[in-house]
Amino acid sequence: MARRNTPSLVSPSGSRQVTPLPFLFLTLLFFACSGPASEARCVFPAIFNFGDSNSDTGGFWAAFPAQTGPFGMTYFKRPSGRASDGRLIIDFLAQALGLPFLSPYLQSIGSDFRHGANFATLASTVRLPNTSLFVTGISPFSLGIQLNQMKDLRTRVVALKGTDHLPPADVFGQALYTFDIGQNDFTSELGSLGIGAVKQYLPQVASQIAWTIKEIHDIGGRTFMVFNLAPVGCYPAFLTELPHNPSDLDSYGCMISYSNAVVDYNNLLNDTLQHMRDMLPDATIIYVDTHSVKLELFRHPKTHGLVYGTKACCGHGGGAYNFDPQVYCGNSKVINGTKVTATACGDPQNYVSWDGIHATEAANKLVTAAVLGGSIFHPPFPLSKLCDLQPIG
Ligand SMILES: *[C@@H]1O[C@H](CO)[C@@H](O)[C@H](O)[C@H]1NC(C)=O
Ligand SMILES: *[C@@H]1O[C@H](CO)[C@@H](O)[C@H](O)[C@H]1NC(C)=O
Ligand SMILES: *[C@@H]1O[C@H](CO)[C@@H](O)[C@H](O)[C@H]1NC(C)=O
Image: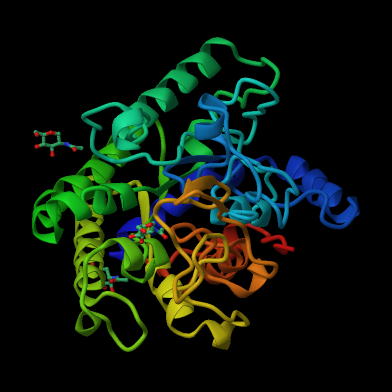
């Protein structure tokens, strides 16, 4: 299986293999002479990302401006459109590949798409949402819409070649395509329909991700990374909101039934991607098991330099989870005549969970380190050989 994918590894760098030697020599000389950390070598000149809040670098809040502090407090020192106190996995990944942070496709001011674009928005699903964002809290920018945006961007890049802030037209075959989506398909109807009904449509979620890869392959994409579903059974928000008995918790305080359903979905996703590999032998499709890293952080935060697993940094109510469904991180509400505000802890670097649903920058950094280490790729993928990985400071 890994073998089947090996030939395509040369595809992003294929053009470089036929580079005339004198040019190659000059290029090497240039790299040798350039200052430290300036010219990172990486076969991927760009990243195109599809996803939800876990990888949204500002798309949702560009479309519907309203984000407030304490989001962004750790790194950006202002709300940056990210659902975290700082950087996301996609930010650290871009940094490691020597690329700038990805501009949101929906951001009309200050965007630069020369090294990719981010189609992810907070609350996005894989499946088409039925009803209004303002009724269900589900983003209208579901995966099918994000794919259409990608196709539109490509059409415009090809038509407007050479325009400022757009990549060259040959970027699409060389880029890395990343997917971090499906969490809202899993969680948004757990409360109303229950786990049994949700399990019924999960195969559709996995197969739609795989077919999106097929569509991008049809327009030239060759290298794909799919991040699997996080251990939502350990999230402070769901531990607070979803009905369960103490006996439903495992020894780490995570909900067993939801944890098992996540593992089942991830296995299904892994199998579905295998089928797509069989269909697209010249594509490299990598299943990235970030779930195992996140689960380890929730279970043993102290082993990894953190303190709190299933307790949110930013929230209200204190207690084991510090999550109040009535007052989400950064919001205020009058409850029984008293104004309460969900504020951030002073030490987000000690937490896995930022706001009960999303990870802190500290956790995202640890997960990215595992991604860059290569141990959670299936099949194996030599990222560190294809790119001079830059330190993620
Ligand atoms: C939309 O509604 C249909 C019919 O009620 C249902 O089968 C489907 O699962 C819903 N989709 C989503 C994303 O909620
Ligand atoms: C994914 O499936 C392959 C078999 O196709 C298996 O070898 C691998 O261990 C699976 N990965 C994970 C993380 O479950
Ligand atoms: C608000 O007051 C009602 C009635 O006194 C009480 O039942 C409820 O628990 C209170 N809610 C909160 C969030 O304190």
